[in-house]
Image 1 (tube, helix red, strand yellow):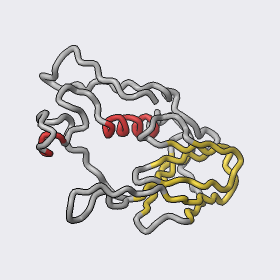
Image 2 (cartoon, helix red, strand yellow):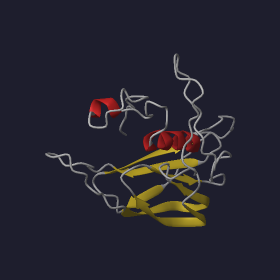
Image 3 (cartoon, one colour):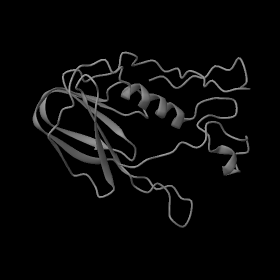
Image 4 (cartoon, helix red, strand yellow):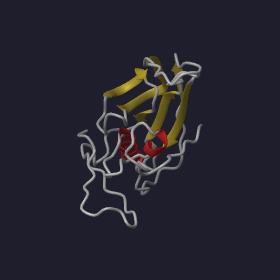
Length: 187
């Protein structure tokens, strides 16, 4: 499991040729960048009110075809729904020059130890609606990209109640500009 840090909340300046000015999740006018929208979507998909009464469970599964740079982590919500997060942690820029590297999606087969009532696949970069679903299945082929996708498994698997909402509430920051509405792209 890797730990990532988000640096920084808002850009320091507007000079696009100065990388140091542009590390924020939001522009200087508080418009969300794609990373801010993805983090928002990820938090929406992982939200858990914590009011379930299910004791921690286990899920028997295997992933076939995951590349050496691939990773996964299994989470469980309080209602017993499992969330399998899968991603390919491949290099995205060249080691010597700042050249983008296109990492193709990798087909990975998820095999479950027993049939799942529902399976829903989500891509936080594209929104909070499921990009694939299955019912009563023991196997599903996934297209694993260079960023995390979430696979919900269990009888309650599916989009969160807030799926389809695209607005990101503006951050509460002292001395932040007033009257700025922060909106994400439609999901």
